[in-house]
Image (cartoon, rainbow over all chains, first blue to last red; front, side, top):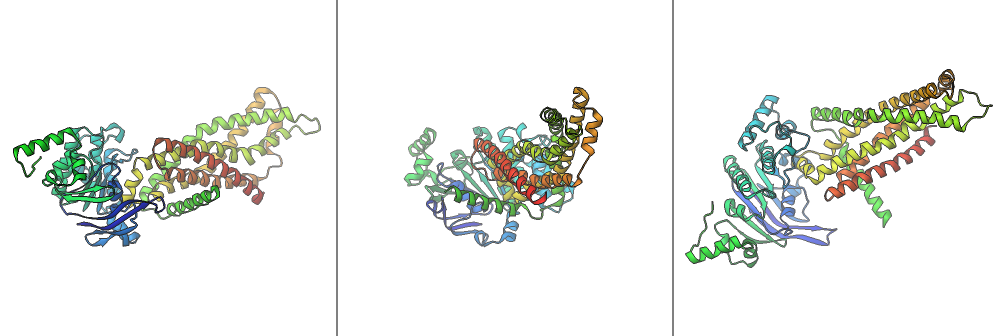
Length: 263
Length: 248
């Protein structure tokens, strides 16, 4: 489990506070979502959790190990347990799909070359990219790039998987494919997955634990079954921002639903 | 304000160098990248060097002949002067100024694009020292190959002068050949090669720094490339003056 306690983050030399006393828990083997409007502080929170930013106050505990107190060696050991999917996939342009997936294996595993290829091929097959091994990132569609990035992120069998806006720039159908893939991988390998998103389809589809960030504060914590019926104005403004979801709410109220099952 | 900014920037550059110069994570990957950089930064530049050098050699010969036509001067002085200009300044300093445009912008834009597309963040997340992984092979690659490029440039420029003498008949070829051999001081060649090592470090480290610290998008990457070339050129000229005072 990853636990964030009393996290504060400032920018511009301490004059602009972006995160305010954040407290949150992200559970093992579950898809944990961090949601909120653009500019609410989601990405800053994720970058603090993975150690790309240093928090100005608070603790970030990975199964009890505080990342803010770690030295370089401990941090390096922890990084071997982390996989990350970036918003733009962040594949290495100079490498093929196979090269990208093999990269962490070459850098950190003690596997032989044959074992590395076998493991990389397994990951590529798992994300349904079989046949694209020799393609370079610019030759792939957005969805395929995301899948290749997922394959690279899981190559070292990580304990924690972070995804920054995995559906950004994708069409709704491809978004669902990526969501389902992340959900399946999380449960198949028992990974603690943390997804930073503002895509409501993802929230309703795979949100097993949801942390809503509003203007740098934790605005609400719950799951996809609770989010429809919450009496929280900020959250409702976010959830029901589109006509589609307003219609869903109307339909639910008219038909007396109290729980939501969206698949 | 500007002074404070410059000092802060220099401090950032020193920290960046400190991070870059450390033992590579995997030697095998390092040597693979090192070999690629030698090819990309050095071997790929040879056609450009050949073209520029042969024309500069030719121009030096023609212009010196036009400007120095005193009958009291020995005829071989044309070859001698051409040689000194090429060995002492052109093939090291001027060539590196030209190469900083090609190589420096290449390095800055490559690393800058990696920064804005989060590829550097991806390396950091994996636990890789991205500065070391990306910059060390470029620095060592350029430091390794640039002296050879300087030697190629010297030879080509002198051949350019030789061919000019044949084509234009400005000077008997024998006098030109005698001129480039007479009063030859081998230390000047070593001096040029030593300078090229410093220039290689300047080009690769400054360009990498500007690319690595890019914030924003493609516009900023373009600006970083330009800034990297400008700053590299200024530092090459400063280093040239200092090394000339120290070594000659």
